[in-house]
Image 1 (cartoon, rainbow, N blue to C red):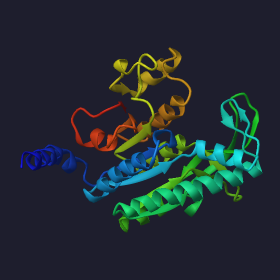
Image 2 (tube, helix red, strand yellow):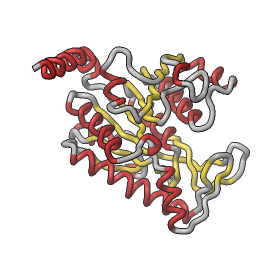
Image 3 (cartoon, rainbow, N blue to C red):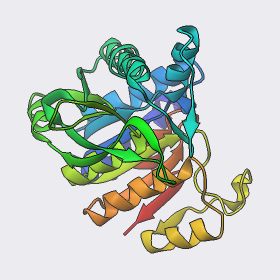
Image 4 (cartoon, rainbow, N blue to C red):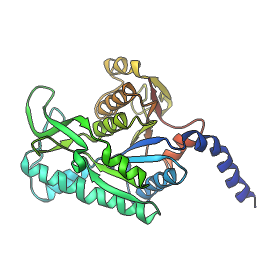
Length: 287
């Protein structure tokens, strides 16, 4: 009986947050680095199904860099990085599209359905959702079919929302000539959140959040204003894979997204802790 009462108390404590966020759009960027097994995958997607059932409108954007690297190695296609970006020639682009738009995307959709949700797998090519333009590396070198989002067409997402489906999006872009591009998943998530005027943008990562000292969770920064991000980059607090995430957060908040979050997706039910508890976890970035 005590355990049942405790469960009821947890639900009551979550009620103000459920009421507050009912009808709100939440874009969740799910990265492969947070997934160490099937249990972790199911836990995360279970949170997303629950969000849908209590009245929120989750949109999932996923990456898959490690899976792409494994498949390229299996097919004996050389991998080359220029200024930290994967050089994506035509052969590599075929593998990127196969892994992101096929293997990973469909796996996530399948698990959501197993957990009682309804999802539709998409790539940025569907409905020309993510219009992209070819970019060069930071030092001006050609990096092949790597693109930057220039426009988000939200019509297909709005249609799915009306029909109560959870969109699961692979970060592939397309230009007006029909060329396909590999788009950074963090950037795609930020651009989609901005276009949808989402209430929240949440990055599930393999770190506790933004820390003043790298690898020291005790120095976690719980809340940041967007204007402080460039200062942290200059001081070296932010670097590597955190840069595209904070850039995406800035894109989102400048477009009207009220809060962005960088949280540890390895923590069981991290998404629910962030949205439905007063203390939350990780780092929030606000305008």
